Length: 347
Image 1: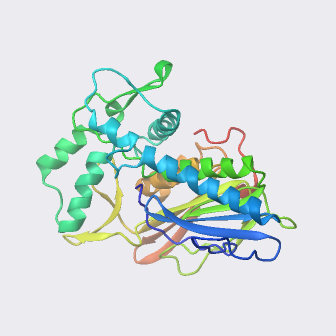
Image 2: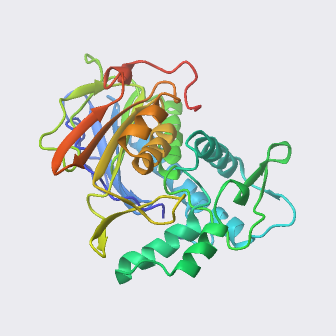
């Protein structure tokens, strides 16, 4: 279900909701509703004076996420992604839907731009690492070697002229958990806009996407508190941008005295070590989602160099070093929030 744990982005502007009729709007006509999708709560908040229009737009947003879950889930054997993985190794290119193609195309761009710190073929390693977290034992070397052989740049080959995919290696399993939720948020926001909603916020349990600023404001007020940081970061206003968070606050495990994250480093096959949380601002949620995952793997110093390769993005790292909590920010944090990228969404 593309599960992701919330990693500490608190929203001052968010308004909770529930199933059933929309609650009464807050001042200024703000409506919100929450549903559980992709394994986590999603809250869609819209600024709209017409209650019927607000309800129609929110329902359409949730429907789009639900539709994409049936395509992108790596938990549902009937999903398009799982059926594609089950076909590995493929001898001929497999034609895929436009949505799956779009996500895989973007995923490969991030894979190549981050030196493999983000990798959509990481599925065999994430499966092995989930078992290690449950048992408290590192994977056996032979099983780790076999999983690593099914992962990497050669495990996923795109054939653009046919909108098709090759999975040449036995055992390859695709995992879009680090990008699929962001893509779904972007598509849901497009659905809101097509129904006349100009100002909206989508909060997918830590993946946050906002469109135009509510009337009379410069943006949606965001106040974040990265896990491990001694205090929250100052509130800032965000418009037409995304904010995602990634870290090991809730799902870390200690094995043989070493603390490992639930986030797998595709280059080693093991969980990322050390206590790090990263927040990323990007021009769209797909970019911010994938980049946050990659930066957690790269760590603060290599990660800051990587941020510079992605127009319209900025990142803030919180980490523990020599027993002290430190923070490092890329240039433009958080001023980049209100500046659209020259080429949005492309690394």
